[in-house]
Length: 222
Image (cartoon, rainbow, N blue to C red; front, side):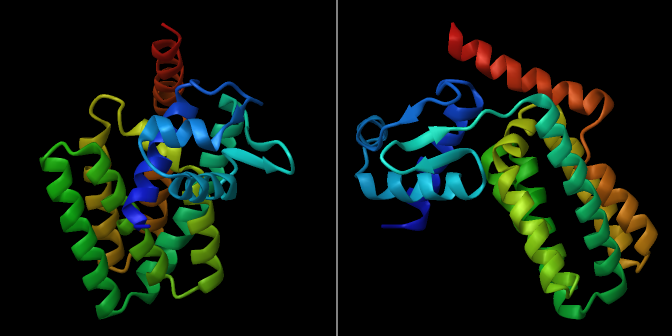
């Protein structure tokens, strides 16, 4: 079983969850999902375990996978905490950057550029993930990197949805560019502020995310 096969199934289930295709508290059947996506039950089972780990579903004895509801308020709270953690990671990375860290961040940033220029939303999402992971590594704080990674994974479905908002991909890359400049120049305060602003969803950006969330659900209901 390949990692890509599991990721593809997981992404498809995530999209269905975010769009409201699977009702809150509803049960996900492994056999039906395997048939739907044309795969065996093994990648479906692994995908469900990964979705359980980030809180999108709950695995219950004798009931299987149950869909967990996420309201706008909870989504906002998670992004709020993520923004603070990312800001801290940016500040640490700016102060502790090594040549190896610089190289890793630069390569990830270049891959993000290529995906953005190709308007490849899914490709950009995964390169964006690598970009953030490279920053976490540059903190040289195992605990902070672990906490950032855990919340990043939990917000994965909503971050992917956020990239579908018009012009968000271009804006995201431009924000990466400013973050990279701050980290590479050793400006901890600027890196903290720019990474926090990159992640936080408030004002218009929160409205855009909620609108995309609701539109996905409305499209599914039609």
